Image (cartoon, rainbow, N blue to C red; front, side):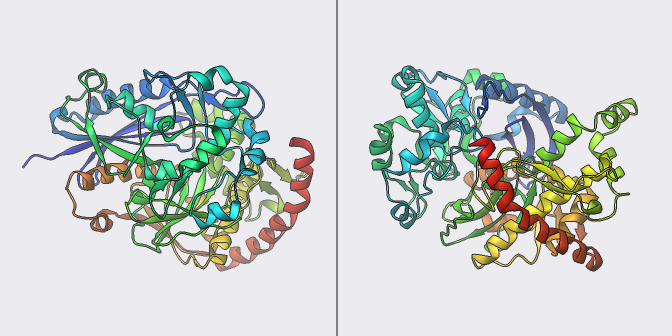
Amino acid sequence: MSTKYILACDLGTSATKASIVDTQGSVLGTVQQAYQVEYPQERWAEQDPQVYWDAIKSTSREVIAKTKINPRSVIAFTVDAMMASVIPVDAQGRALRKTILWHDVRSVDYVTPFMNQFSFPDMISKNIIPVMSAKDPLAKIAWVKNEEPHIFKKATKFVDVKDWILFQAGIKDFYTDWSHACLWNYFRIDTHQPEPEIIEEGLGLSMDHFSTIVKTTEVLGTLSPESAKSVGLTPEVQVVCGCGDLVAVSVGSGAITPGKPHLYIGSSGWISQHQETPQFDLCGAGTIESAIPGRLLLTGHMESAGSCLAWLVENVCTSEGEQASAVNRDVYELVTEQAKAVPPGSQNLLYLPWPIGERCPFINPYVRSAFLNLSFDHSRPHMVRAVLEGVAYNTRWVKEALSSMGHEVNQLNVCGGGAKSDLWLQIFADVLNVPLRRVTTLQDAGTVGVAMVAAVALGEFKSFDELERLFKYDKEVKPNKKRVVVYDKLYKAFRDIFDNFSSVCYQLNA
């Protein structure tokens, strides 16, 4: 019997990747295309939505050519995507303005007025994620209503990025999945139903202004002839709704059994685990809908992780970039290799990893990054190692927040681009004081995860629990007791700094 494949696309903030995945979770090939985020004003973050579809078309055609598969062997097209971004569209589905991205905080002045219309305890009791920061979608829509009324009046719908992509693929209406819907502040994760009064009273809109909500496993139809040609497939290919990037990774990490956590180290980072019951905490951790219908995902999501290292490499380690380019070497491998020579703790240099504010282990849009205790004894390798350690300290704070909610983390499956670094893995193991297992899907956890959602949707597996046996691990890392002692001391300093530092940031950024 011939092998069947799934074309899975992962649509991120800075890049889109397309993977050809067989129905047993093996990746034949992946192609990635980067693009830029626009920052036209302070607190703004935007992109032209056309960038997403153009990237999906080019990466899809390229990966099909690269893997040399027969396009007729592809049974499904599906997408996982960044979450909580907003695109207003007209009656023809055309974008009326650029995407207001998930980390955009222009709507900061509208968060409190919006929430003053509702009872916070009532929303929590109904298992609805309330509007708690300017990064939440309904606050963004409130900004459009007040600051761009001409756009607000023309908009027939406000949709997320994945909804818009599925429409470009030929689906005749806008659809969103449970995982995206629950981050739009009007969706109950216990009943899987919206609460219309929140958008009626809060924005003067109706549910008709939002995408139709379906399960991640919903088969929405087939590719239109035009879109099929654009991505290099045939029009018979089934379009499966898919899910958010975070929840796709949770499947692609292999940590599918409830109570089994995973760590993701990408541009952002998180610790997540599947479970059956909803939970929320003021630290910013809480349950969202998972990719698995009927199962929730407890998540402590940090806004920045690998993006902190990327900023340092691009803006400070410029000579290392030139050196790596001259010998055709990955600059991240070069700088982390140099950082290995720096002793654990980076000679007491601390880095605070909050360049765009934070969502968990605390909710604060005003806090920012800093190097603290920097001296003439420090060099760029110290700064690199301090960034790696700072992200790990913040992750330990998330781990402790989950522990306070009743979930001890004793082992972690690890994936994401940052997990390629043996040094960073060891730092995480030492700072968190738990053993780590690196899953072989690593950088393709998102596309593998959403591909397996499609495989279940099309009947290739009877349940999601059957998927766990597919995943393999290529590295296990255990904590080093001596380094654990070093990092315990520095972690305490990291935590002690926060209160005074955050108050200064509020004075500067509010």
